[in-house]
Length: 164
Image (cartoon, rainbow, N blue to C red):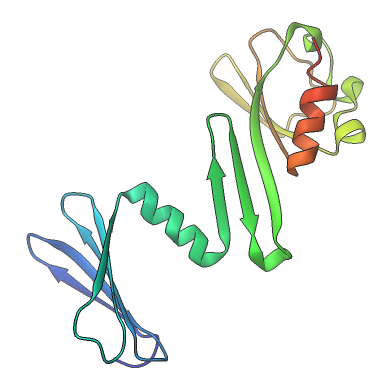
């Protein structure tokens, strides 16, 4: 196999195997099994015994994100993405439930971007999503807002906009 060539093999009853050989001659094999697990094997050039790791699909996607430089860290209401190709840019996307103090106010009235630097990119209202709501958008009871920005901008949004 030539350097960095990708080879895939369908293994009947087992799953699919993808294999890559690096420029140094190391081999990396990934098996997507019929049971849903993902197994990764590495074999260093000159070694006889591979090292193995078994991952869930979520863990495999996380490893893929790390390898491509798009690192995603998630908690219940927030996701942080790091892009190493963009000077280690880290962006946070967070979901907030709108408090009573914000009901009836518009995005423009709240001066979200001017006060915090964060941007409201979507609002969920009655199980319907409103993508890129305009500045004239007024919040109602039960709304949930999806806000994007750097971590400190998200914290500032929470402190300054969502005050009860």
